[in-house]
Length: 222
Length: 391
Ligand SMILES: Nc1ncnc2c1ncn2[C@@H]1O[C@H](COP(=O)(O)OP(=O)(O)OP(=O)(O)O)[C@@H](O)[C@H]1O
Ligand SMILES: [Mg+2]
Image (tube, rainbow over the protein chains, first blue to last red):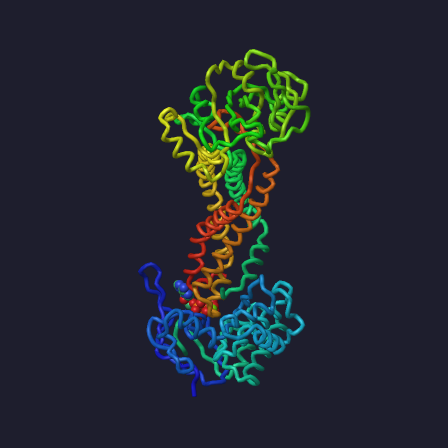
């Protein structure tokens, strides 16, 4: 059974009145619990595709069904609510809020749920343990290494137990060792916690971890 | 609020310099705003404390104050015979027929210049009617002599007003034999002497400035006023409670200061609001990726709007509190101004009231909302994808 179904997606941007096609007629399925790698040259539309699946951008044409919800049919605030419980984001530059501690960053998505303060604390502490940062709970991002920051970001992405994990070049800004740690962590999340992961990467070593590789070139799957 | 308050506060702490500058701008405006209101309130408080609720003052109807009021002797005598007027212990009506004139006096060397001072000729009854006036040093002037006593503000601020010194006015030398404290009221800014002596010196023959008296029962005033208004011989006079008379005198001045002050501070506040706006626009553009991230995580536009508005409000409220805190020290300052009603100096303290505190904080909050509104709207309107790409 596929958890993500991308159906005939096209996406164009407009600059002034000039149409810039970015994606054309993309279709693919992601089975539940899969680890998908998305590769392709710069500018091929990887981030754009990821953004569409994650519900932060809208396709020009086509539909995207994630866990039986047609994301393209949701209104803006429904979509925000949907994202908060269905999508975990991992960014290349971690995107942690610098003024919040590791704990507070991870707690952020839970502020949109009905969980009590105590329950939130339990969840946050649990996921920080999963990513191996139980001893860095009260550190601020700038007191952490890049690899540690990315692990906090991964903790933030999984704390709501989302349907899919979206990672855009998660190791793109890391040294070799840290990159390896992050890939191991993602692999563990996939194999042990059965998380469905869609990851964009340029790095062949990262792509090795994925079970399915999709190649994108000039807006088309090859 | 969905986006935690600590996010707001820590962002303010992080960019210390711009926060400090913005807060300073708002604090300065709130300081001026509060100072003006405190000044107006100080005048009102001083003048209202000058009047007593039990005393009644009679003046010429058209007069703007005692200095422009003339009451002829026969009118004064008719008034004294009205029923319900309180009696002194020796059975005379408790009525003080007084004159008020304005003289020039030099300020202390430190301040320099000349000031206009009210000189009041009073009677024994006048002293009884103002029990809050206490002699601090020296003695009371002697009736029938060219002696005076001076109020504490005069004593402190004008040259040659110590006990034993002489001042020159009304074509004669007057010996200062004492100085008194009138509890911070307007009388502290007056010089008092024997009414008969002063009337002669100033050429008030057959006339007074005002008549102060008391009724046998404080609640008899309305009935007294009805009777008074029926008397055709006294049509050109008006009677009021003394407290009301001083309150009315303070109103024009306080209103003038308030309007002038508010106009000035509103103009200043434009600067502070633009400052807050620039700060907040910078905050939004520095944190575009953060905003995109928050939105991606599921926070709504309105959560972002609220977070930035709160940030701007926090800035302005801190500014407001700082400005108000600094302004509160003005309470220790005593200043003086020409009272429009009496054409003479009135010394008073800046005075803070709960309503001034509330209006000042409200004013700062309004500056925060106006200054922060457009930047917050920009933050809320950011497109998620573009915001994330801007990093
Ligand atoms: N908001 C936008 N407005 C206009 N053009 C855009 C926008 N977002 C993306 N594009 C264009 O769409 C194309 C694909 O961009 P995208 O970011 O998806 O590529 P990518 O495959 O992720 O590249 P990279 O490997 O460099 O991250 C690019 O040509 C980019 O300039
Ligand atoms: Mg990209």
